[in-house]
Image (cartoon, rainbow, N blue to C red; front, top):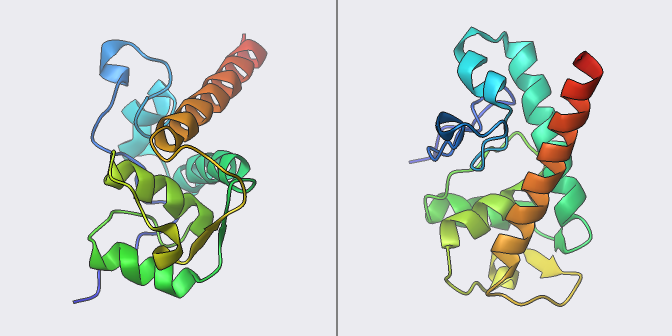
Length: 149
């Protein structure tokens, strides 16, 4: 049975929210705390704006490390393994979801339709990508709120 495809306005929540512990940027989905709190009141367009920012940051981090050479294969493998990802976003963003779901398992990326553009330590890549994603999100949050004040 085919999985339900997410829309650009679908929630990026991963179910591991750190904003409840006082973080201004969620360590899970990387939304700002006010976005997490207000998500259900956001319009579809406002949700798309948030997801566009998150997509942009993921692509920025992943584009120099990986290339998706077979998007259909990648989507089929993610569906087969029941890995949660947003079909409407750039397929590079799905790599983040794959690594998150794989945990410390080693992956044969070629079998997912992905090639690597740089050498990396498979044990560290997930944490490296997540750390860089959080740093970019926090820096963006800081600039956003400094302009507002």
